[in-house]
Image (cartoon, rainbow, N blue to C red; front, side):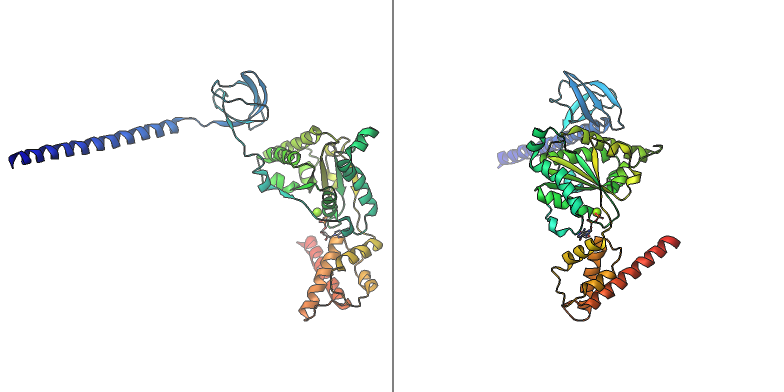
Length: 375
Ligand SMILES: Nc1ncnc2c1ncn2[C@@H]1O[C@H](COP(=O)(O)OP(=O)(O)O)[C@@H](O)[C@H]1O
Ligand SMILES: [Mg+2]
């Protein structure tokens, strides 16, 4: 009996010391964790930079404000090369590590990448313009060897200019379709407003994506927002736009004219463009996309009514109401005519539906003009 009691006491004591030891271990572990955490807080942040060039254990880096430095590469750092994104100590600018960029992963969130499906037949009028675009964009993409043999350099890019709604985007998509090219669409104004601080990098990544997915067409809508002539670049915002624009020019200069990447720029303010973008070697071919003539408008009307359920319509009367309509206006009127019919419980469309649609669109435009004048 007594021995059992002793045994009990001994057992209880051992149990107690185990618990204390356990607690001690937990506390020690916590202290360790907190120390480690403290160390982390003490560390100064590393700067993200870009490698411009590597010379053995040294490199030229470009820091985010654009300045460049000749710096050391830490012995622990993995191998780096020009173009890599790296981590750099802020004090002495030593390169300590490489950042794996998820290549092109981000770009595709920012720009529209597509394989368009627009045939030349869907474009009314513009025969001459289509011919020219096919000659300077489609043919070099499809048969570069002809140009190589002949010894001429097709343009790296073209500029389509003219009023809104005249079919510029449509033309660019059609040439991408004809060449089975990847169509990468960027909007100049968005590039410079939405991605502050990232514009230049985005431009770089866009062209990388274009090369990876070649043949490609990089389509820049509202090019004037990016490439406007600037008299003074005082504010940081203007400097940022300028940097993005410079990167764009550098990318244009960086690829072969016979390569499988072409740039199509669009603007309705050609007069505003910096001549740096329109000079030979860059977007050197300029194609004016006019407001349709009445013959062209007739063609456009035919295209847009082709799949509509029209009944005995008087095209001449309808077209007379559409004087100075752009292609986009014609399409809008056709869609509106369809709605007029549906509202009246019909699924076929009559001349009168078109005339009503035209009145409606003209009224809308008048009130818009009124707003512009007095608003
Ligand atoms: N020449 C045209 N032929 C047929 N449709 C046209 C034409 N021009 C414009 N459209 C119609 O108007 C829409 C908008 O035109 P878009 O190409 O975006 O004009 P832009 O880029 O010049 O502003 C097109 O998707 C198309 O439906
Ligand atoms: Mg457009």
